[in-house]
Image (cartoon, rainbow, N blue to C red):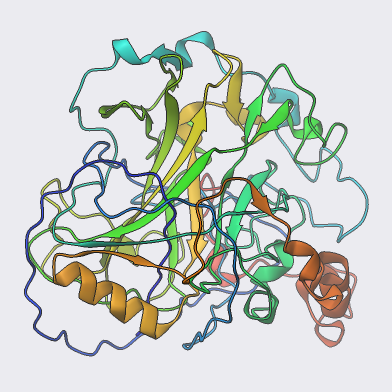
Length: 472
């Protein structure tokens, strides 16, 4: 059973350290979700993703920066082409957005019929911003964040590539998210990653411990600036304008929770927090914003922090596993949130609770916002993050051992150094794994030439039914 280990550094807060029993955990049978492969048509899912608790900080965290790549000895079944999207929470949603049209492949810009909602694009409203002084302390916001026992962190600087795909929610669908993502870990992540697992396995990574997990969340923009994607899908065509704001630090830390020992994170596990469609569906939001100087004041609104302070986006992922599935139809049933004391139901297996904290220094007043689907109008409640755990069984086991021994550990290379900014590794991804080539190899709609000889659109995958409203 493998696990997902990722950590980069911005410490969050102190955690109560409760020693966990270290008795061995039973072997669990693991199944891939019975999803279908991509049909090129992504349906929105209604992320039921929970709201995570905001404040309890994390103990052993380590700064996200540092370079180094290493091969990941990933084992375990490949993921089925189930679609998942970014924002979910205890219910995760998929980032595919409401797309009724088929993907036109790698080239050209899609029309409004293919990417609906563009006529509803707009800016975040004034009441979606607030000052830190207006936020009450120790209030329960969202789900997750109740930690105990030990922790382990790892460093994954940002990759130097962006795109508006979401291979989890809309595999094979160009511009499946209709908003641009920041990426960390795997350097090859794009729409094709969901139809050919080898594109991820053969790529380089920014994680210094060799973890090849593809990790992503919506970019933050300075609304007064000019972005690199004016007139492009995922950019201004989908209502996302402004220059990208680079995070100054990112922390990845897995935590213990509750009173039971955790099992290692299984390889190929899909993790989603928040919902990219939460503004319109009212479901799945787990957005959390805080200022570094006051981590106990958490809000689901954009925050204005004091001068010199750091505004943080906090992503708490679910950590109660059903013991068999690595993904699920909505990307949220296989892995759910513990209760407010950090305990999982007795029929669920506790796994490490991942918290990712993305920090920004001196944001431009109220002139900033995250990317979103056009009709979501950059509402902060749509913030979300997703990843597929592609570490190694050895790292996953070592991390679980650390948590159960109530220790604070760091996984990385001996050459780890503190640094910020993106790493220029994406140009080392083999040309054959680039989006255009990968899609050409698979034929239209992500199907092999032999399986898509007809010009008729392929039927939607079985796992796509009932996904309306869940896009990420």
